[in-house]
Length: 572
Image 1 (tube, rainbow, N blue to C red):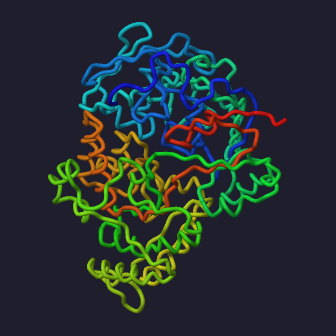
Image 2 (image 1 turned 180 degrees about the vertical axis):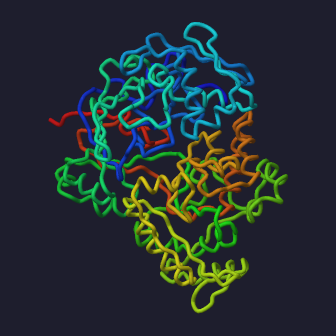
Image 3 (image 1 turned 45 degrees about the horizontal axis):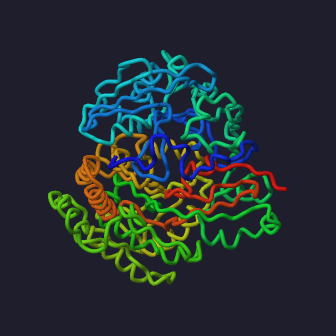
């Protein structure tokens, strides 16, 4: 996106991959909940989240050691003009789908149209900014854009490629579970049982085994995804040896719960993986499409009532710091105090629409750590009073006398979120607010989230060091009413879109950083989410036979790093 890629054109392997890693072995990973679809490219159904990373491929691939840099995967060469109004990809010779059928330009053209018209809403934004997708030479496809947006050339390189022969003339969006989309990736689905397991098997005839981007990656012969009712049952399965590795997100659990016999014997190893990526946002998101969350003062009150210091101490031993903004823990995060310099220049034209505290500076409230949180409750009461709410007979009421009530929608298997909500309800009772927990199964949960049918719900948005067009899908105005989008809070502030546009059109790193910091200010001051703790390092407990390179990417343990560059080394 800016400057030149760090790796030379003849690089042999990614810097954090071991090109000499042995292949073989099989592992089992655990998921909570269930699944009723194996098509990760449509809105319908619940899909194992790992699936699309291992079975399908894109024209270009990421290096998790470089933000905003892609390298050729299905594409052998990439060409674009200075303003990036178009991008041209030349496919490598011999690219095939997992069934051995050739992958060609016609599949690329078909995939862009199929995903843009029948695919998941996350693909709609790019498709609407494409003027044409045409074959210009053998194995060569040119994509021309209708919008000034320098990131589109990279985004085009990250669209999954599907088989035209498999899907032409068929209902892609509503296909049954047994119609698994053909992919060209290193793994294929060899067996499955809905909501029980998915077996991924490494394709012995994988077309890309010799390319640089794949050296030292996808080393396991088999990866099985087993599904459990909730996190507690999954952890018991891990302790019993039924799962090969787990990620632990609770610092106190990491210190106190990992003392079972397999660890004592050395059969299980605890590995801590540092990273440099933004905190992202984890917490309870409020649906501003519904009252009372459409009033920022109410949202502010609910943030004050959330006794983070006490909840953090109770559930994690106080070991994990709080998320302070969407891009905190990185160079992209907002700076303390009033907006200055280029950040202020970007925000000032929108000052009439900005949330309170955007330019002046906004910080999350800090409690004294006691269970009562008197100061937080007083501040919450003051904001509710300013918003026109009153307490009558111990119940918080609207101006028309109706009680203030809402539900926190949570998937049944999310035991930690339920524990957090239960502690939060005690504080809400002190405000006279009658909140309840609505724990539902995965299928119902994801269907309601996609339809924005909730008051408040757990929220996790991982953010990278290279944010771009996906930000519009996360909190842009157009996505607020687009069912299936990830704008769960229903944010519709034009300043958010303006800051995203400034990011996308930045010509150098300094302007990009300023735009992202400005966006971070608007989102944080919008008070859309009640933030929890941040994950400043990854924690993986795993079988001792599972090994990984000593050189770590700056992104640390991302969604693909484990198991993508890991391997199996039989103990002596």
